[in-house]
Every structure is written in structure tokens, then in C-alpha cells.
Image (tube, rainbow, N blue to C red; front, side, top):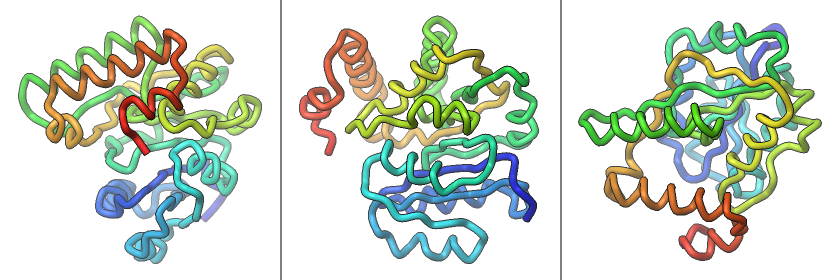
Length: 224
């Protein structure tokens, strides 16, 4: 394959089924480099290596894993995706249509669930991004390699590594929202309850923006 224009980096921690579904949504002949960063030494991921996917080992931690994937990548653009996402048709060309001055950006947000609860969450995300320029990692974060290196990559935080990076990215220069929706799994909302999960997310981000450290938030909310 010629040098790809985009490297897709997917951190995975004991979620081979979701990662397999995501990789399957990327056409085999797409001019992209796909890198799975395994933070759990999962043998189930090895099957994907036979389909042209690179498997990189890393210590667990989403920020640490994404940095490892970026270090192993070769394209000018790096797209970081959660394993439980699905890319929309036409995403490759849409991303590359970003204005030449753009340093990075994200996709629009959608959930793979029916019902008014999912639409309400999507509506809230649209307004959060519109008002505060604050997408989360489940919208896909892409960044030009030079900008990623200048920003020092992702901080090795126990949570909110995506928010910390996006705030620096937005401050660094022009960003671009791809006018297509990246579909993410609604399984966390369905597991925890639509209101409970959204309220938890709101409490975490509010506390973070008020100055509470991610380490303390991680202890409060029980994330390992």
C-alpha cells in the first residue's frame, strides 16, 4: 500500500468484539493504516492482523495506548477512535476535505439506539460542542501529526485524557467538524440508565473544569 493519508488508531482493552466490528466497517481497500493498540494482551485481536491491521502492545490506559499507536503510525493525519464506534460512509474523503489551515477536528455524534432518550443525548452533545467546542473521544479526534507532536500527545490520565487534549487542540488553531456522524454504542447508557449515565458524565466534566484533578475524579467514580 502507498503511504496512507490517514492512520486510524484504536485503543482496545478487552473489547475484541467491538474492535472487530469497527475494523469491519473500514473497507479493506481503503487507503488508510489501521492500528489496534492492545492494552490487555488479548489473543482474540490477533485474528485481525491477518486482515492487514497492525497490532501494537501497550500498557493499559487510553492516553498511553493512543500515544503508542501514534508513535507507530506513518500518515500525516491521525484519527483516534473508540473501539465501540462505527465510521460513516464517505468518512475518508470528508476528513481530507478539512481546510488546509485546520490543525485537527472531530465528527458529529450519534448513538446506535432508537428512542427519544438517544436523540436527547445527541441533542445535548451538539449544543455542548457548539457552545464550548468540547467534543469527547467518542466523536473521533483527528489531528495533523505535526500538531500532535507539538502538543505533546495525550496526557497519561486515568480519565478525561480526550477532553484535556481537545482543549489544547482547540487553543492551538483552527479545527474542523466533519459533517458526518460517527456512530457510537449506546451500551453504557443502556447499562447504567440514560439519565444516570448522562448525569454522571455531566458531574465529571463540571468538576474537572472547576479544577478537580482526573486522579481524584477517578477515585470518586471508581474507574481503574
